Amino acid sequence: MNPMWLLRAVNWVRHPPSQKRVVLVVVIVAACLAIWGAEQVFGFPEWLRPNNLRNLSR
Image (cartoon, rainbow, N blue to C red; front, side, top):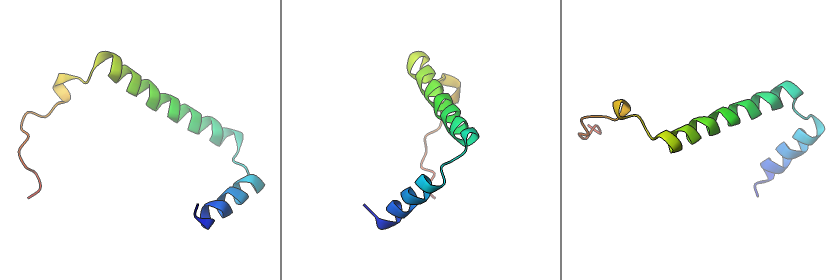
């Protein structure tokens, strides 16, 4: 483990995030999981798939 991560962890323990920040992160993670779950259930929409798959690395 990088020592910088230990220093970040110590700082986080000394100054924890606010309740609003924790709720915001939980809501964002839940929204991402809901979108992923909907994609797994219903599949990726056909109209969002590219028609031309040519090499775009030029």
